[in-house]
Every structure is written in C-alpha cells, then in structure tokens.
Length: 179
Image (cartoon, rainbow, N blue to C red):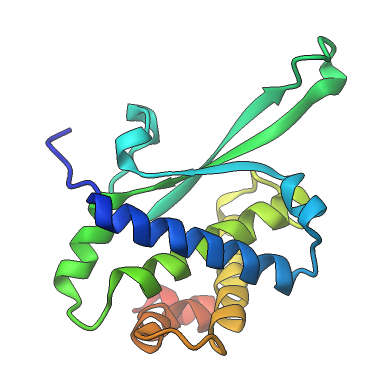
C-alpha cells in the first residue's frame, strides 16, 4: 500500500477530545454506568498504530474483533471479545479534502459515536458481530439512526453538514441502493 496520510499531532488531540465526548454521549444514551462502560473491552487506534490487515480502503473506520484471555484464567471461561476501532486517517482526510463544509471534529464525532454504538450493541447481544451481509446492512441503518438520534441535539459547530452527509443512511434501504 502506498504512503497513506496519517493524522498530525494536532489532529490526534482533536480525535482524543472526540473520543471522550463520544464515550459520554453513547453511555448517556444507553444509560450505562462507568462500570458498565468499562466492561466492553475496546480500543480506538489511528492509522499509525494499525497492523497492515487492519488498514482498509473505503470506510472511515472498521471494527476488528479479537479474542482476549484474562491472565489469571487459563481456561476458556476467561475468554472475552476485544474490539478495536481502526480509524482510517487516509479515508477521513480524503473526504475532508473533498467536502469543504465538513471539519475533523464533527466528522470524527459521528464516526466514533457510530462505532461505539456498534460495540455496545455487540456487547449487549443486540447484534451478532458475524451477521450475514443483509443483516449487516440492516444493522448499519439502525446504527446510523441511533447515531443521528444521539448527535442531532448536540451543539457542535459543523455538525449539520455531517448529519446531512449521512442522511441517505436514514432512508429506506431500497432508496440507498439507488443513490
């Protein structure tokens, strides 16, 4: 893969602020205590920290599921799902370059909120990680609806163009295929 554009140090600071806000918004939406929020094992990484197999072309982020094992539990009962949100800096930069009215903070707030909703839904067994293609498409629509519901009332400069960018995901699935 050719050299891909990664986030700058200043952009990483913005992404870190976005992560804090997104975690708070999602935990408030799902009425999760701090204790519950810590239970789903996940991490958020940018391009510089991704393994080659975690880098994709197209999406702004992807979730990779790994199997974790507690150190003090050698048996299978200590196994747990560990999710890694893999931000695709290059794809995000590419879209920001094309869309002058979209800025990094609100765009990443949407992306990370969206991915955290997926992780909550996987953790609460509301959706299977290994669903069929059609189930995944329906799940994407549900998660985009939830993301919009969470972010629509949030007063963040530049959020309206981001919500408009994703509006096709709130249309019937048949309408999405034709757009």
